[in-house]
Every structure is written in C-alpha cells, then in structure tokens.
Image (cartoon, rainbow, N blue to C red; front, side):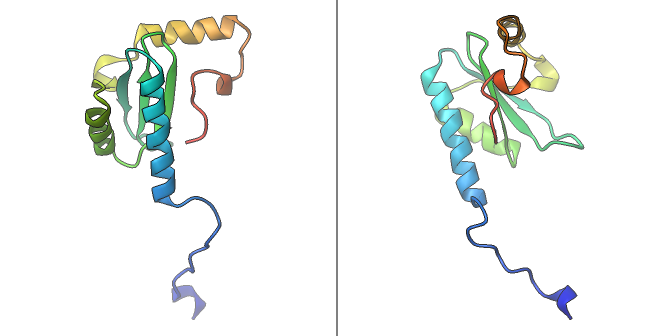
Length: 120
C-alpha cells in the first residue's frame, strides 16, 4: 500500500536544515560583528511560531530569526560573547521600540522594512 511507504526525500527542493541553521548563524554573527552593543533576547514558542532569537544593537536596530531550540541561542551567545535575556522576564528594550518608531516616522511603513527581520 502506498500509504505506508516512506516519502522520498526531494533533493534540490530547497536548503537542508543544516544549511538553514548555518545561514541563520552566519546572519546573527554578522549582525553582532557589524553593530555595537548587541544583546540577545529569546522569544518563546507560541501556537503560531517556533522559538525565536531577537538581537538588538545599542542603536535599537534589531533582527529576529527562528531557532529550532533555545539551547542553540545559549551556545551562540557564548560563542559571540553576547548577553542573553528571556524576553518574558525583561520585556523588549526601549531602544528597540524607539528605533522602530523612528523608522516608521521616516516613511518605512512596511513591517518588512523594519529591523533586519528578513526571511529566517
């Protein structure tokens, strides 16, 4: 019966999980290297989204990426020497909200223009 056969992997159908994880790690590392005073905030899993990590620079600029497991973020924060906080305990930093408000006032109304929150 076809119902019980294993699905064939679709080669070439997109990046593998490892490639995606490497791309996310590279993006976060580049964000930390290119901006001063970066802090990491872990956002919990919701019914709609997986856990995410939010990096916020001292200027308020931010980027958000999905992560498979919050433990990955702890390892990455040690590797990049970035402090890490639980957003449920600390809330979002005011500088992030201020930066987003400045971007909106400057005419960037699209949510995709705010932060560096591109595809994860």
